[in-house]
Image (cartoon, rainbow, N blue to C red; front, side, top):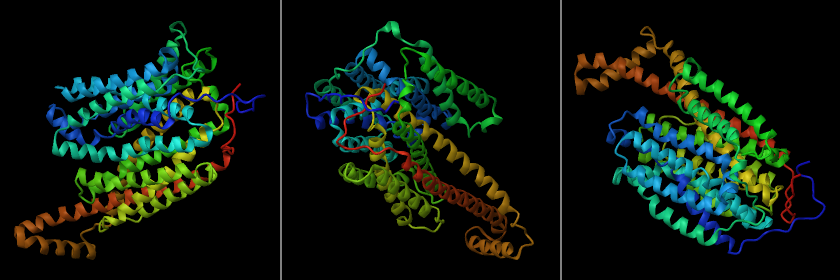
Length: 526
């Protein structure tokens, strides 16, 4: 079996430099890259206006980045073996920084999209490399603390991104959301060059062993999947011919990719690591957590802007307490991992996340800011309480040699889960709002005394400002607008409650994890 104990424990490799200095070096680059996955979201209208494009066309600024990022993520370990991991890491940081500069100077939408593809491709390797370096640099008993540092980047950065992007765009220019990467990228490259080193067990491969077919199938699968998820709701899903084609091509490429990787002597992604039970369960749970995390991050700003009439910046500020809660809890949970069972911490985290979503499931149009901020803080605490022990449990029974390949798969599962979660929740909100509106409209009859009374009240409120005749014409439109608001509100409430139920259903999965002993030597795969 993949997790069978070896006859003699392997000797742990330790880096030449202090692991905490290495952590700062790799996480500086990772934080920069993860931030860029969400920092441009609130700036799309400004980008579209400045580059003479429609908002729909400008969404390719996000889609192009995500597609390129997804393709590189699982191939990171293979590319590190081909070029040398340290050299590949520094090259990715430099290319990401150059691409950021090109994004900032873009004079057309086409040029900006090309620059974003380069930025996504070079940034895709930073997350799995950083996670692998951290797991290898720290001894097993301190990996909880190492994953707490990693969580600060991959959990907090996406939450802070919209707030930072909105503030920079409103006060300076959308171009500065890319320019701020230049000093960070330069500093990260210098630190990585000085502190990061390739471990002695890193297996190198030659260009002659490159699996072009596997890489091609991987690219086709993830590119078509990402396009389908990103454009599905906009193109009416399977009523659209391009979406149907993407679904068929993606499914076929996925099956062919799995078959190719299992039969290849030099696979791009070694899927055999999934024989390890903890790793397989961890990948499933991070897929679900990614859907929950990115789904709620997408739906909450929409709720605040569409129904509570917050500005984009105000919505970002209201979301920022989640980052604060996640950051504070990450510091604490890094100390708890190893002292309290990972299964207990993950279970408590999912229960807290369910409670936060249940609180949001009771919102209405008269709520104050505290009714949003409190569950947002609780959800931030819950996400950190899940992510750190989940990563530790998932990787705890793998050897150092397996870390590079495993982190690529693990991070891909989180990103795919995020894409699925966003696509699913935006579709559910739109479709259920339409059905709710149709149901509520059946009660909006002119012969209904309650409707007549409501119309008279609206007319009385409008008459002093627009006159009696104009008030009679506007009152039905105002009443219909209120009906649309209530239909949308019910849709958001149902979806928040769906998230709460999903969190509860995730909780029993923690019982499938094997216990990871903090003093145990890593287990080698056969």
